[in-house]
Image 1 (cartoon, rainbow, N blue to C red):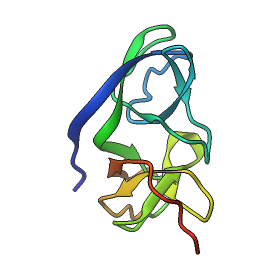
Image 2 (cartoon, rainbow, N blue to C red; image 1 turned 135 degrees about the vertical axis):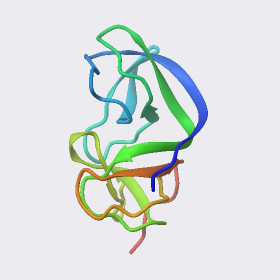
Image 3 (tube, helix red, strand yellow; image 1 turned 180 degrees about the horizontal axis):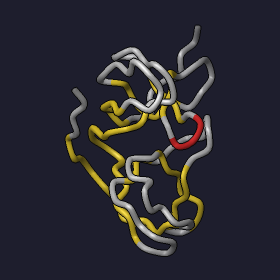
Length: 123
């Protein structure tokens, strides 16, 4: 069962409409501005609030967040940003955004992710 432990958040303004896009990995694209990450990009954190273009949203940069899995994921593995604002099992050389605390058995499962910038898998 996925759990969330609210940690440290920062307030950033949305560069696009984020209605319906809670718990997605985001990156900083300007002064106090964020946008959703594309696959394999480095996330600064995970959006915690749905916001419209130009509104400030809370981005968790430390803690345990919910995230949507791109595909099955084993608990305890490093995860990276996947397609469509999801997380996926990190592969060699990818920028890791956290550790999966739950297993995902299928795409779109909601899991808990311990946010962090960890070493990428090497093999």
